[in-house]
Image (tube, rainbow, N blue to C red; front, side):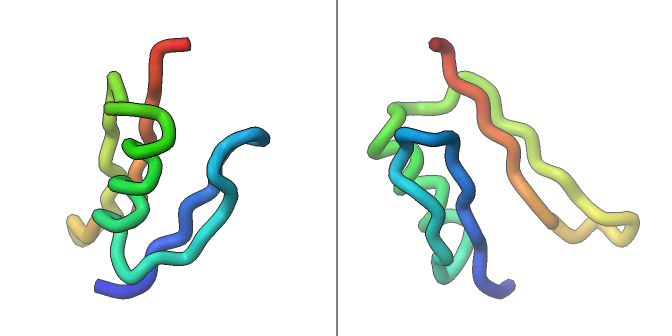
Length: 57
């Protein structure tokens, strides 16, 4: 796959570039806890191009 960039709200663990999306998702889970919702975005060919996570506040 390729590198994954994580962008978080202010006060979060900050932006980072990770080896893959799994590494970025694990970092977010360590900081915020498990996400309540998780959407995966795909391009027209069915390739994963992004994740959107949501937490209860």
